[in-house]
Length: 555
Image 1 (spheres, rainbow, N blue to C red):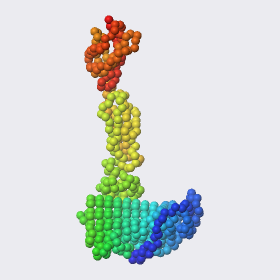
Image 2: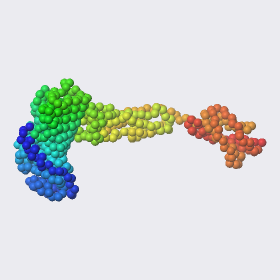
Image 3: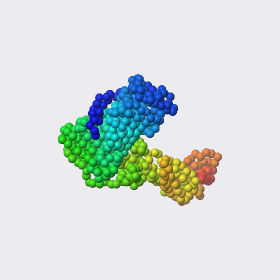
Image 4: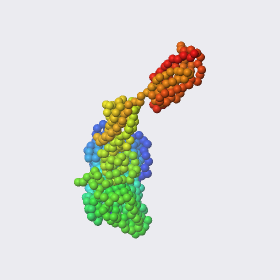
């Protein structure tokens, strides 16, 4: 990188202020006449002056920019007051600067942010966008010419959901405490460089194809950007180049120069393709350089292309496979790619998104396990799995439980689960109950679908048996102090004896068996006419018989 930029960065470090969140009420400015904006009107040519004035107006501010182009020699906002600069979208709202050096210095408050713009600094500008105090650039585009740097921070900054294009320079540079890049596209000779502090890049495409030399992510301790040990944590990256046998291009590099300096790079769940040196490690003059990779795919050789000096390269679960991209400049994974669902299980938090803003929790191979893919883009699975369960046999009229346990849809959204029964009825839900009225073999059809039109079906068969017959009690009579009766099945028999015209005064329950039964009356009855009634309750099913009665005389 040209040395003139290091000098500029050293001077810029002095302007990074201590960030204190603003607590004042917010004020809206409507720049260029945006629709549905009811704040203070600002002419397009007045954007620079309005930003300057807002730095000390005592309130948080929102600048809402209409579609159009806004030009000045430079723009700056460095205030403890929170600022939200909101364009109509990248390609719709364009900010141009014509001066050299820093094109746009923005920050001062960690909650300040720029979104929805395309930023294009002057052709000879040293740095495009300079973020301070943790400010964020999101859903935007930065296009720099020649060897300019795209986005730089000397303390803290974040780039999210954006495209940074620096064809002969570095897309992102950190020379401060911490910089975060997520869900973005970085193009340039250097995708991301950390010369001081810590750099975290995730779910990002780094495209080096325009240059025969360069580095996707370069961690270099002991340069004019700073000293000490610099660190980089890289997760789910796709780093691509156009020189698979080139010796002047590296996917990631960990470098250190001078005692007490060095770099430590961790790469996980990433793919490096079309680059001659996928992993480089170089420690010089007493500096250490380490690289640790895990579940990443790069290179066809067994080891690194460049490994020199103090430090160590450690590789875990390396995949030496063809990534199988869609092709023709499209670096999404094709169906059948070995990188689908090959990432670290459980490593991605709920709700995480890929470079396209699509869910990372997508089951790409249809095994009902949502494991992230390797690389910046998550293959959005299409395989729905339907599994239907039910009891094999049930009596007619009795409810049977149906379950869709083991079914799944590829994405994180809830599945739609519906049941269709062959008696013309239906139900919805993962667990339902249904009773068939008629004996025979019956089928329930399960349909599982997601919100994107993918579905699968399964069925469960149930044999419905005729309901068991209730118990029958027959031949009930009383002779010589004994009760005689017959049962169609084992049952508990309730006997009630009453003198004619009186309520029953004697009730007795006895255990009966199928066939003939004889029970001795336990109580001596006085002479007279009596009525005996008997009811049987089946031991197996609890069904009741009809009441049976008889009369007898005691002399």
